[in-house]
Image (cartoon, rainbow, N blue to C red; front, side, top):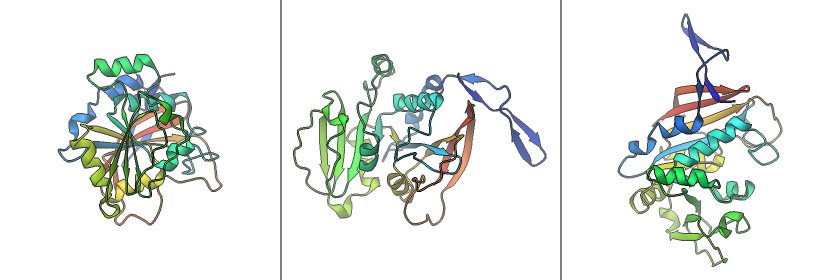
Length: 260
């Protein structure tokens, strides 16, 4: 089932969103048509974040995000990756989600090349202590390009991926420094962050997030599952401006601009 826009009807000072009717949309065409990379400033990529959460605000089920999304969420997930020059994830997320090749479908890789992009995005992560989840499938992919920003030496672990380690002094290893390198050295214009909460919050603290794509799944999880953010509160809180609401099978797909 395609995604649908949710019609908005004015009711005084509020608007009622209803799932009845609406325009049917293709996720890939929708994302490709935004041309978000063209909005990149000179000193960093245009940075978007993608998360799924339950209706009670949990970002994982049994330690993974896959239990929250349905078929439409996977289409949005793939469409965002297909549009991005780089995909950033924290080392904990790489491990928990057992990351492999970022664009597995040859047709999607061909479509990226036809749009002037590399066959698949550059994979990126940050580690202050030099610790990586070396058992994940990503490292065994010879065609995968991976850049690691590290505050410590990373010993050779036999990665077959095209691995570049950018060593920085721990005091200088900021998210801004990593993003500046991705923009200036690697030509990344559109960066997609896929979490986890610690990485997302670090980007927010340095005011580096431009948009949030949030899937709200029609589920209640409870328990001790992760939230979208982590650590101390943001001061001031980051403001959001709603750009769109899409719906499919009860899941809401929210696009927010982040007010920095």
